[in-house]
Length: 555
Image (cartoon, rainbow, N blue to C red; front, top):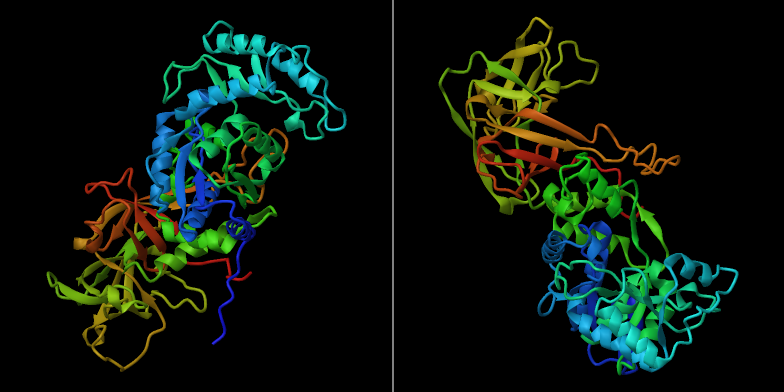
């Protein structure tokens, strides 16, 4: 038997070589979110990639918050991110870590750079720094404060820390090369004065490190071996390498960039989602129409479906976009053999079986999932008065309509054959009742072979049915127009993204469904009990996904 050939992505190939060359004894990766909003589907790719690599190589995985910008950071976001990472099954080693826990070490690192003549305090304004920086085609020019002595810089930097200077009045800059073709290397700012209350350190600090300075230090302190980030940080890599090299870390981490996940016609920008929340267009960061991880969880997606999606997307160096239909395919594939197929009537009309004995109740044997016998079966009550879907009846049907209409016979799923004999309407011409007769010999499972019918419809027994609210979702974005309005940058929202059905009737087995539980509703799709709004007195179900798919594997 031939050995199986295992295909490895480019990151795994780099790690293999580093281990072979003895660069590191043990692999250590991290997921380093900034707690300034909820995570979205793109972040799930980074979480699962970093965790997956650590697990594959028997190494460690850290969850660390890059909380160096207090203006946008909140404890709510920290808590939501921890919940998302844990829900995805990414088990981090040790405690949750914070960049802010290393502020003292970062300050000492900055002092070290000053003493080496590699950093200086600059008095230029932010606008002047931009002007001095140059352009993509023109080199920058040195700050007039670039040649301050080490002693003066040490004194000024300590006074910055002690709060002697106004916010924005002075910064600490790395002294690298103002003529570098990479603008990120033109003496970047590494510390600024900013009096902000921090969610973790309170008012202990009035100076804060910049991300490009803090991040490599955090990685180095924690012993991260491979700092895996998205492609927009590729131009920042020389600065990352400069920081760890100048600070003389013995086993510096290696930055590797991969392509972001772009999902077509979805909103992932934090400022856009924040505005949707603030304007009340969605009911929070976890609104099921969003693609935050919290929203996908609330809608009924599973960690397994997200992992399947990421495996299909793969890891590459080239940016590309993915159809949302692929994500829907993954949740269908994950749930189809795991969930019971229940009967639910979302747009009900009453069906009365005139020749069925009044007061009689039968309990029909119903297989929970025809494709998975292990899920067993259940008993479902059947009686004289039922609810069926309104579109399962037509007064004057077109050709090839095989459901219920005057004179036609259909099977009630798991029940009997019934023939429509009459119907009633209200003063507006809306059908309110459908009358029929049943054939007692045709009970499902009886082995009846006398005749066949072409149509089968589902139902729920009216006296036993559970009333529920059902929410149907479409894309939050108007797909024909795209996500953003080209004229003003606003969002092109779909006014029909949410349909709320208040008077749905479900079979009684769903009465005790708990928040987060999911089911397949026959012919309707997969649905999940809403964890936020549902209660025993007022059940609320979210449609996770319809049954039909436009995505084909391999396409």
